[in-house]
Length: 248
Image (cartoon, rainbow, N blue to C red; front, side, top):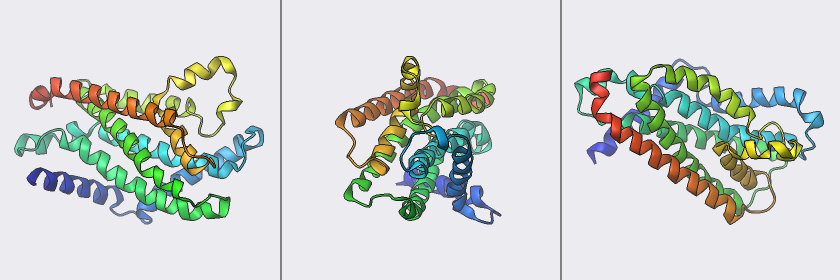
């Protein structure tokens, strides 16, 4: 119970600090995708060949920004909390976990706004939309595993945060968000499918954009990727955690 209270307190702190002195608060979580959407409409829409382009892009952007925000904030979560780690008996694991939980909360609020606004752009309200909950949970597990990996390695190599911030745009453009998968030449499809984020965006878009429910193959791909990433992240974290205090 004490650990749950600590995680809750850390997550609450992250949310408060993120929107402290902000004029629009959590609505930034939806404003950012809308700004990107406006750019993509100008650059990509004419040649996209996508029906209902606004719904198509926004359904991908909402999930992308969750991933981008949570990994960007978590990579330095252990180093940034060095004072707390040294003075209080709090497991280092709680810091990337709290970042993931707080951003997950923001995503759920953003999705609520998205589902309301997308009424004007033809979203179909059905029981299928409830599938976004397990989709988001799988994405959160994947993100937490990556957060554990990045934040623990960043303790020893502080360039990790800079490197991650540099390669994120490349991952974004390797993910069919502003363009359709069908618009990519066949020889590049393998490159796109080597990107794990592709599978989560595809699953989320199948739920929010496509008229048919996601196939079991989509779910199995995301489940396998999430479990694998979490196991890897947890393994690396456990191997390094005993050296965190001396390295910070």
